[in-house]
Every structure is written in C-alpha cells, then in structure tokens.
Image (cartoon, rainbow, N blue to C red):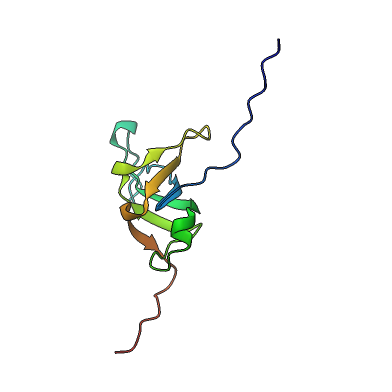
Length: 110
C-alpha cells in the first residue's frame, strides 16, 4: 500500500502576541573590516518581521508591521524548522526592544 504524500507547510502563522522573524545573518567581520573566525561571531539579534499575529496586527499600541527591521532579545526566540537555512524564529512581542525606522517620527508640539 502506498504511503500518502505529506503536504508541505505553506506558511507559519504566529498565535497570541508573537511575531515570525527572519534573523539577519551573523556578522563575520567588524565594522573596520577585520575578518572574524567562526568561533568569534558577533551574536546577531536583528531581523525582519515576516508576519505578525492577528492580535499584534489589531493592537494600535504595538507599532510593529510586516517587513519592519527589529532588534530583539533572543532568549525566548523559538526556532522554526520550516526552511533549510533555519533563520525563522517565533518571538514574543515583549522581546522586541527596538524597531528601525527611516527618518525621525513626527513629534507632537508641547
């Protein structure tokens, strides 16, 4: 009897106050151009948001959207074995410590 073919997952949808993030590649050289050996990689904790959960998307108090570049604390990042490069992680919103923006935000006049 033939074994039924398993369907590949098409996407990952985070649940609750979580994000799916593609971690940036680890840095292999310093800003000054000095190449680092593999053991001395600078830990990378930046990445791009691939998708946000419905809870995050509907929360006006959380200014995070798909494709934002973020700085996050990696302790609670859960790796997602979805792609061969294993750069996808589900992270809680509270582990995002900064979002990178182009230009200054409009500041309200006092």
